[in-house]
Amino acid sequence: MRTELVVRSIEARVRPATLRLPFRFGAATLTACPQLFVRVEIDGPTGHAAELMVPKWFDKRPTHTPAQNVEHLARAVTLAAEAYTSDAPATPFALHARHRDALARAGAALGLTELSAGYGQAVLDRAVIDALCRAHRVSFFEAAQRNLFGIDRVDDLPGWNWSAWLATLRPLRRIEARHTVGLLDELDAVRDGDDGLPVSLRAVIRRYGHRSFKIKIGGDPVGDLARLQRVLAVLDAECAGAYRYTLDGNEQYADDDALRALLRGLSGLRAPLYIEQPVPRESSLAARLPPSDIPFLMDEADGSLDAFPRGRALGWRGVSSKGCKGLYKALINRARCDHWNASASDVGCFMSAEDLTCQAGLSLQQDLALVALLGITHSERNGHHYGRGLHDAPPGERDAYRDAHPDLYDGDARLRIAGGVIALDSLHAPGYAHRVDPDGQATQPLAAATTLL
Image (cartoon, rainbow, N blue to C red; front, side, top):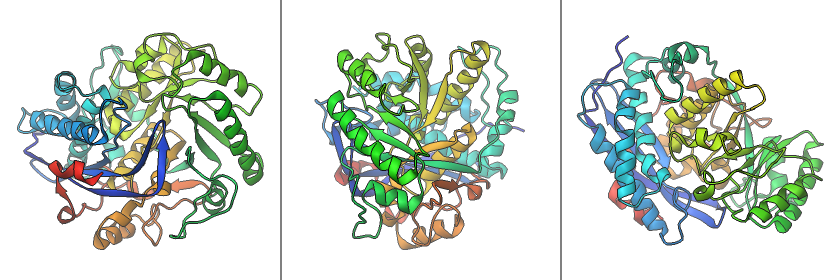
């Protein structure tokens, strides 16, 4: 089947996304930010994608303000749109590969971080794939299994049969939601907010039935271990010991001695599945990680396509999938894990799925679809807890999403989690997890993004 296409036009707009609870990750606390919506027109159906423009994650440099962070993300979108529009016919992957390095260089020249520079392509690629899937009337999963994306070569996987490997992927129909325990979150009291939704950890578990958790830590081993013991005490009581958890350092362990102290302290506790990005991204590929029985997972340091292979040589065993980092990177990293683990069984390389407060609608749906395709059985989900989700959307759009995805959203158009599990059957439809168009009348031009902080 011919899957080459030409992008005729791209429209990028924004609308505000407000949080119901403050979300602290690392040294930053988020209360509101813009949400990006892109619309891609090809010779056929249009494609859509959405993603939050989160300040102080893509770029944590203290010399840059949140507004500058958002300006950089908007610039990355503009650069990618200029590159993609009216280019020569290409498969979706060829279009991505043709411009990836040049866009990275252009972003660096403007002072953007690797993650910020890659943001525009990451979102546009999803909209291009959505348009392709809708044009061929196939689901995202079928398009991947048939390699309609056109993935054909990655330098460090010479001879890899992409079409044969993609055909083996079996997308999940259910994913376990891994709940984020933030640094500001209440733990012990059973308390709901004024909106009737849970606020405290105990209340969250009793409402949603979670058995998987992600616990944020802040860079102080003494304080982190003390708080971790409090969290684990709640989990022991509420889950009767039947749970698993991960730790997220959010780049806060810049001091090697502090990280070693954390590892020593963890030896006397129930062990996490892995520790996510404890060291700053700038030093992640400069020195070997300390020895640890608990694997380290790369997240913020995964800014380039070659980051995971380079990190593997320094002791990183895992890497995260996030829609904002790019679906092609996620697929390539999953293939790398399969290749490495088949050739060296003691390596134990793996992928995780991490949320960046994905909001209900296209952003959430496309991220969940990618996680399902990768076969990752549990995924961090925090957007429904900290954010307002579809309640920032117009009522008509909110109702349309709820009606099109009754397995994914409840009667209030909030993410439906039952027994700690998210059902994904409605995502197995033509398009990239897309059955409802966002209401463009409720958005503003991309240039307004910094006013929505």
